[in-house]
Image (cartoon, rainbow, N blue to C red; front, side, top):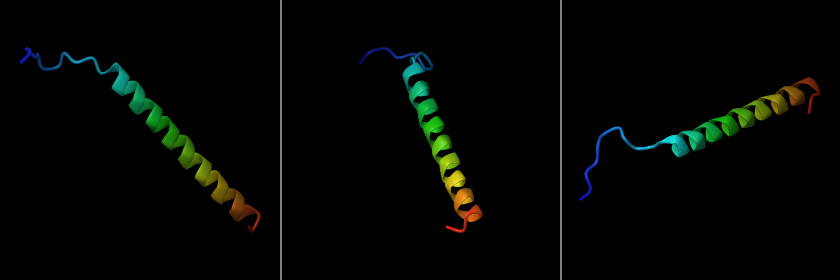
Length: 44
């Protein structure tokens, strides 16, 4: 087996993917809230 040093893995790709996921979920939640507010204001 190869020698592995704890904490030496490059995690930039995983961090970028996680940031993208969180960004999309935040935008989705904001969109859902905006739709609900719009429906409440206009009695849909």
